[in-house]
Image (tube, rainbow over all chains, first blue to last red):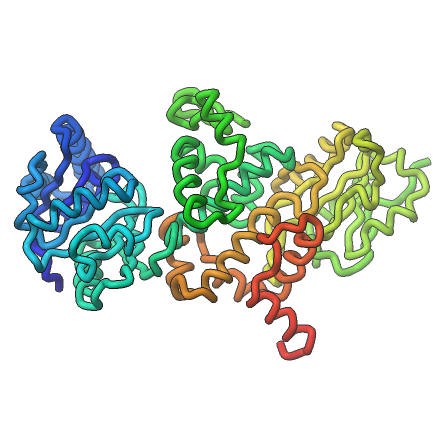
Length: 291
Length: 220
């Protein structure tokens, strides 16, 4: 059972839109806020398209599509989040930006409302410190793409109350997600593992240890991983890897988290991965060629 | 007259601890000499005419191929190749062969080796001659970090493992994998890589060192 009835989402980018869809799909009235009405419209179209595919694949009843979309509304007015029992922020990964919008929201939402952050690299405690409700603040880091990935890394800040964390945990489960508890540390679990691991793979390429295709083949065959690290980097984008490295290295100064020089050279060359047709591999339509 | 040396087993092979089609194929292929075991490189001395083979394949531990085949200012390379079938601790060997080449290794030797292992149902990844090759270079720092994060209380072992399973699609998380395959062996490999590279990421994590110490004491 959850005490949550109405869910707010701050930001309607890829993560925010996905989180909004997850909440609405689970039957929660969901209000997604963004400054840009165009971004809200695009997110709504994408959400409807995602659900339509679910209907076509027999995973969702057609009647449920209308119900879900009926419970999912967008707004450009922060005041419209006043009725929310929980608000999950998924805005730009900047402590200043997050604190500013959450500080304003603190004057709008009811005292019982819980604030959650989808940050992947910033400290929950530090974000909470600017929110005005440190005791009702939790980390809820969803994985991309949120509507398909069940994992949510949940972290209490130093001042988060046990009650607030328990309410947020039950809410996460009620959305059909699978929460795991982690301490409030940079990168939590997933990024703390995967960012340095992928950097290590890039450094093997830099050092001439092996070609990308051989590295990926070795990892998939030797360890049974579904995807090699360099294939994964091409999928998430080298520009995204740079941002993750800068965020993680900036707070940990762990050598493995430092961005390898090759990443910056590839970005300069426009080799960002699948989205530009070339990364560690070349892409022609959806076909993959050896690196 | 070609030598009748196609397979030399010095004992204790981690790549081929038992019968395997690759061994059968090597026995029947006069072009290839397959040297396996924990002292495979030493078996080179028993080959009188190495130049007569298309490929001489030497099973490697954590050492470089150059230790056995020699090096010469970056111009080294011959029909001698290194290989290792990746294996995690006490787990059975995987189907991955890391095939180790030198800068001027014979393309003919690489083709012959690749064909033999492929015919035996194994998949080959080619790498240059660096300690730890590909998989150990990547997985040992990851394992050490996971063990360290467990000690630091980032999350429970179960949640650490579940996170990478759900988030990355791994069949097993690092803690379960190490507990199953053996922390002491991880310690051995990490120590060898730490000695080779001097990077802190390879230094065996506390739990691995404890397991190794207990194994050495015979405490199991």
